[in-house]
Image 1 (tube, helix red, strand yellow):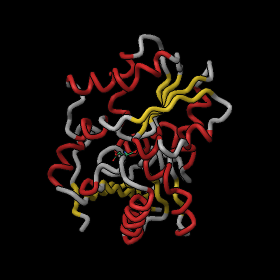
Image 2 (cartoon, rainbow, N blue to C red):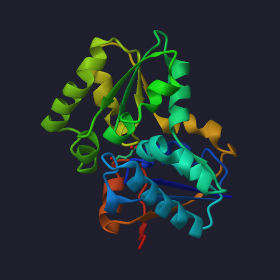
Image 3 (cartoon, protein in one colour):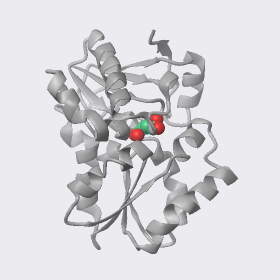
Image 4 (spheres, rainbow, N blue to C red):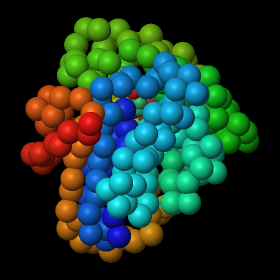
Length: 247
Ligand code: DGL
């Protein structure tokens, strides 16, 4: 069995990182669509076209299942994609919701994600028995992709996006965008009380067919610059990778 994952860029590697060596696919193929990054401000129509192009590419590489390792595509067009394709397609929204339900004690859940994701209010709808506070964080992905995690710009962005959630005393925060787990340590520090951080990668194994531990072959593609992708991936994964070009 071959598993395919895709995201706008490097963010989906936070999902890949959690499943490497934990499931029995003979091969895992990752596609980072860096040429079209960011997805976070795109319309539903654009996202559907992009997702179809990425899925067609992964199918051409003979994948058996696909993980949409992107909150923006999962929240906007997952149901449309499931209607178009016969192949199993797994999104991250339900996975994140299940994680948050498991962890919250005070039923106050924060969601941070891209503007396109937040505009769907999908988390509020799915978690309708909980107090859900949503916040679009448009500056996070570009700063993360540029490697500016430890910067004044990032600290200011964290303060302005997370202050309202801290004031609501949420005990659980959903990373609705797969780039955001890279901010885990900073965000933990920002909340001066213990908070559960919900990362799709940590909860997605339940959705995958096979959970035996095995070393899968890994293959990486990017629509952007291969060398940049390889270099930047080091911030997300502990292994050196070779990236191939998706034309
Ligand atoms: N990592 C993506 C997500 O989960 C997309 C971020 C972006 O490209 O704006 O939403």
